[in-house]
Amino acid sequence: MGVRGPKPKSPEVKALEGNPGKRKIIQSVDEDDLSSGSLRMPTRMTEEERRVWSDTISAFPSWYFTMADKYLLIAYCRTVARVEKSEKALQNTAAVITRANGSKCLNPHVALANAGVVQIKMLAEALGLTRRTRRGAIPQSPPPPGGENPSTQAGAGPEFQDNLLAPPIFGPSG
Image (cartoon, rainbow, N blue to C red; front, side, top):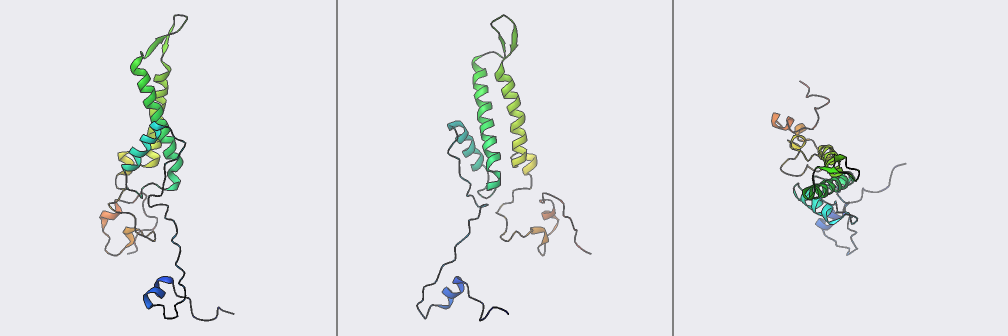
């Protein structure tokens, strides 16, 4: 047996039609859109890491990073801060140091900085921070609601096909 009565109206429709019975209209609760800039800076970061976070987040539209990117961003900020700290330490000392027994070796800060640069590059590519990975990935406005692909809309030309991150699985019929 089906549901009885007419389908309930949304609060927006009720508000537009008026409220002759003066009953309380329950407002719909807006769901949090995690892709619209709700990513907050973690509290457990150092001052240098916070500066890197602010610089990185402010360089992109507010909707670009999502909650799924949070831990990659934290790792990126920590690695950049660590490399900067190693670079500062290298300014005051030589790249090759002399040990207590008189032998020479590479300063540990050089190894830390070199390993950090490799990790920064890997994390930046995963987050889409490099020029190569973000080319065409950032449209001028946020993505349309409902997850519609601009290339499937009527009148979409080849300019949208270049902006896709992956080629379409099924091409247009015809």
